Image 1 (tube, rainbow over the protein chains, first blue to last red):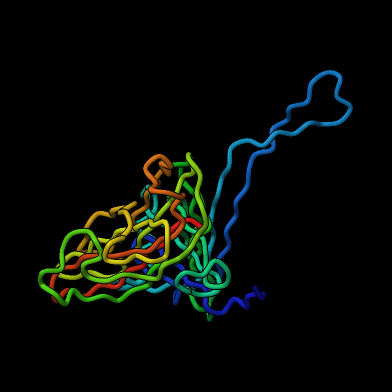
Image 2: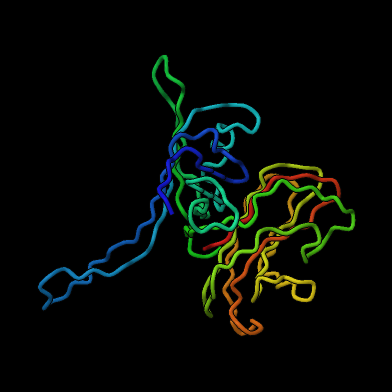
Length: 133
Length: 130
């Protein structure tokens, strides 16, 4: 598998292909590192805890039927939508380039704003939900 | 929970046969993918994005099989049945692998199939955890 130049990422959210509206995407997957240190230990002991995931992205604001603004605006606070991100595009059956990530999410933040003379940008932040379906 | 995902079918499909309904790959099938043996207790996760709206619905399934054959005599087992939709939607399911129901080996070969309303066209993508 070779490195991926981020030119053709696919971003699918809640039944919409928003790839053509985004110019940035980031996924984070992490686990809490719990302090399990007890008397007698000479260094901190860590134990893996609950896992969390989130995605952030940005792009250019557009309004209109099925455009990015109504899609993201209407999904704020909505649970159990599905986010899929394929950083190198979509290739059926591929576990390398052409594969991606998916998760159930809640859209927690959507914002936009910019300065005079610039294309109006938007930003979005979604949080992964739960361990099951 | 986030999972690594393999796209099984990235489709623009049309229900061309009016008898095309129900489970079993009656309308069309996607790429067969060997994702390796799964053990008892493993949880498989499957996601679906329906990326268009149409007058008729599309219902997508994900099947498992112990070989890549998927012949007429060995069509695999419907592992996931997504809800039929005529409009944009996203769905996510988790299935705990039941080794006891496997025929001989842990089924590692997966594919998506679909049934669709006659003449209806929709764009959709089915994926499962790698």
